[in-house]
Amino acid sequence: MRNFLSFSFLLLLTIGLISCSGEQETHQKEFAIAIHGGAGVISQDIDPEIRDGYLASLEEALTIGRDILANGGTAMDAIVETIIYLEDDPRYNAGRGAVYTNEAIHELDASIMDGRDLNAGAITGVRTVKNPIVLARKVMEESRHVFFAADGAERFADLMDVERVDNSFFNTENRRRALERALEREAVEMDHSSVIQENDKSWKYGTVGAVALDRDGNLAAGTSTGGMTNKRHGRVGDSPIIAAGTYADNNTCAVSSTGHGEKFIRNAVAYQICAQMEFAGKTLAEAARNVIWEKLDEGDGGIIAVDYAGNIVMEFSSPGMFRGAADSDGFFEVAIWE
Ligand code: ASP
Image (cartoon, rainbow, N blue to C red):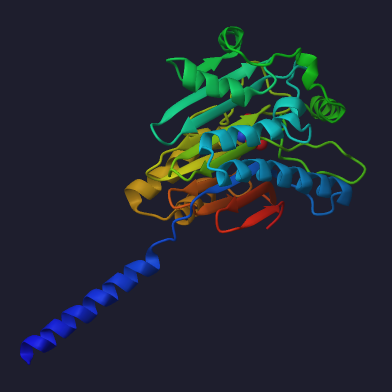
């Protein structure tokens, strides 16, 4: 009898422990993707036409990535194709709609990382590459290096099969006006730091990024930007920096950042989120909240991230962040504000 009671007690304890740990365990998704088009002070009073244009564009970009993953494609292909779409859309400060530097030209940055093996590629200060994310991928896959800058990145592009354009291809009227205003105020303007005002259709936002988990359990992350309006020669933000703007590790998570680049570099934001999961045992949501709200200052920006189980987190401390997320459970959402 005594033995029977001890056995029953042990059995109940085991069942209890299993169900407790079951509660904490997250449901493994087959695939998941999140995208962003920049964080910042995005007024809720923006012209409804502009707002709807952004939402439609985010929806389109998200659909491209989601469909690749749903059809068994890789996380790497999903994020690259999604980012190409966002780079080609002049609404965003990446590729076609890149902001102007102080010298009234465009210098673009991008980075990419493969969570399978921590392989990575990055470029900064490129002037003639239509889709910087494509060149970043080439650095990762076809060179023994990780990061090429300015003239060196252009020379690497000469050796690769990537589409080239004249720098004027990136000219847009809205960004030109943003530069004129910044020059008047002698400001170096974060692309996300102003308000879209009524009657002012200058779109000031839009570093872009994507993170994904595929059916093989691989994570990938990528980020692309024109940087800051009126930035000085050679300024490099966080977007092309592995560990600050982009990070992916199959053991933890994939992250893409957007915001005040200098702060994101100092805090190694993308890596720190994954590291808090690995070394402090935090969930992705806990790690992201800690970094965005405790390590950075309110208003600095935000991140999108997905972990190995397909949990998606889109955390930001700015008033808005253009973003979207979808997964294998049928979840699909695009949003700008809370
Ligand atoms: N992080 C980018 C930079 O500092 C800008 C942004 O995301 O808005 O270049």
